[in-house]
Amino acid sequence: MSVADIRVEGHCHSDFSVVEEEFRENFASRGEIGAAVCVHKDGEKVVDLWGGHRDEARTQPWTEDTIVLMSSIAKSITALSVHILVDRGQVSLEEPVARYWPEFAQSGKENILLRHTISHQCGVIFCDAAKPGDFFDYPAQVAAIAAQEPAWPAGTRGAYNSINFGFIHGEIVRRVSGKRIRDFIREEITGPLGADYNVGLNEEELARVAPMHRNPENKFWELGEKSGTMLNRAWGSRPLGVDLVNCRENRVGENPSSGGHGNARGIARVYAMLANNGEIDGVRLLKPETVEQLSKIQWEGVCPMTGSARRMGLGFMHNCPPNTLMGSNMKAFGHGGSGGAFTFCDRARNMAFGFCTNFQPEGMPPGIRPRSLVAAACGTAPDWHPEAVQPS
Image 1: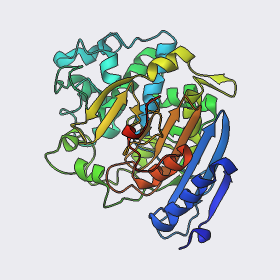
Image 2: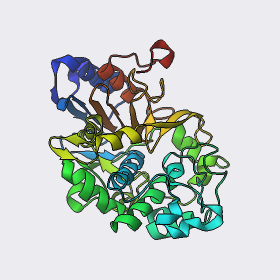
Image 3: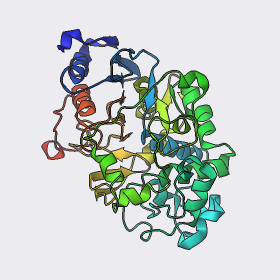
Image 4: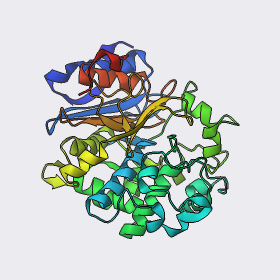
């Protein structure tokens, strides 16, 4: 299929025409099935493109309002929920989690700070008391996390908290605000912003979901399904024999670690708010000083859970080229998902980027398709290395 034959809709500012070129190339030569990309610059939506199909047979077109599983981007939205409570003075990152969730103090966790959990440094990365299927039973999952012994002392080591992260912070939000995390996200973040992204879909939203298509070359899922790996142990509460990325339980349930569904336009709008220091179009969710604090990096190095290089902040992944590529500003931050969805903001440029796809990436996420689009949007090479520039 030639680039000219690719059905792409939406709009793209002429200054960002290379983004559309790469978007079309993803379909022509990189195996894309259906996808969308959105870019905000200085408060303006300069790219809003979608194309391809919802199904592998390529008979059902991807439309303007199609949504898809965005996997672990949910972690950053759950973290944002916590930062909203910080902004309101209802929680502090320097307080023990057990102050807000007393049961969390079990098994030697009484002194673990909220700063430790939200920066992926708490050591509570497994959930050994959970049974297969508890992943879709929120009370059972959080009870098992409360009973879990840390794998190492908090603050001594960082590791991507694949499953527990969303549940830990979702429970803090519930205890403090009185709202379930799915409701807090809808009522306090995506609703006010008019962003098409949510955890726990209603019937109208369910009708718009494009199924996720597995990629046999996806190394993250391969690692998670391989017996004996840390990631496989962390995934112990996931039900067996279920299409986890497409099952109804994941779409309508309360999975604040990896169950959020939306599209590029929706998630880019959330990150455009962060890029603009907590406000967009007159809707302010955070004070500028809160955004400044949440943007701080906390640790960097090879993550023992995934084997990938990470630069991790307070609930957000930070620019870590060439894999987690967010342009040339090393202060840019965002999040990716195992299905290939990717989003970030660059506050120095007042820029936000969102991408979603229904075909999992090759290798470790996010894969070449979003990297090519990020490079096009930011004017960097897809294999850019930080040694080539001075961090701003």
